[in-house]
Length: 453
Image (cartoon, rainbow, N blue to C red; front, side):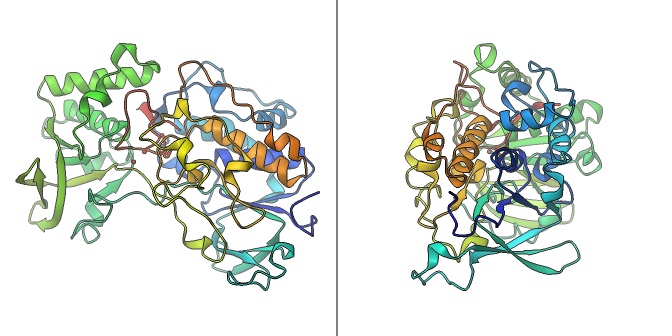
């Protein structure tokens, strides 16, 4: 028995990234009809933004078992389980074949931006008959035409990649930040590849205290070897460099340890100017680029740069959920039952206990936030956890309540992280995943962000 009075309606899934596509795979294997709304022109839109970044974890931890079942029926050539992919390789070797599967492809809507979710004929204040009314997803296609699609349940797997945290240490954009948007990038730009022309031979300030920022810094230092005029400032908002770099050769994820070693050497060699602890206060345009006024410790500091990269984490977009009854922890912006399990002050991604429908349930029956967005602002998301989330939630929607509550998530003893990015987390320690997503406060997003490709 489904959670709606009309099980003929599809299960709406917002976001066709790894977790959203996994949810669709579980749905079809349980005889449900999914409809996936992806605002990008192709699946895995956020991963395409960090396609050049190599994640910290192997393929074996980045593929959902229901998705694997569907793909193996098509003769899909599975990647080497032990290999460690880039974001682009995850898209090409996994997400694109999965999205093209004949049981999923007809239900995928690309270029579909979800504008709002509500109940048919019922606003947020109305209780009578609410649970029996189907959901309505309001969305806009690539031509600008608006549509309304009924659904028996809704899974928001839209992630947080496209709502990065701003530059200010107080969670706000600093004065002048928005006006200088043409010279400020967020996340992990491809400074050695597609964006190289903007960074070669100029001074760039990287703001962020996590592995995402470290990735950008190391890529800029590689660029510096090719163009000595390239200068790099690394502004850490929190004085936690020792913990960030401390894993080294003993890090439980070798690729992450190597990243720390490389950053340590760059600092020791004087190839990198470190500002810590640093808080930006204002961005102003100057004749040669930008003037950044801030505090270095408790002393005023001014930097003249041409570019800024902000890698200070991500936050969920809650704007299109305003007509739903959503219950969120005031600190984490995650479901209240989930929040204490993922609190980055207490947990790393490897210590978050497995969880499912019980922890993800909102006051709105049949509505769930899953994947990286379910963690709100916490950076402790693990992709395998997201896969178990959607397995549990889809089982509940399908009426298999026992399976929905039979939670199993076997993690390696090291507690390694995945590739779904919550990039640039400011509160990471050496045993924490960095989130694109990655990633990421840090893919990241994110799951784990990563070593350079």
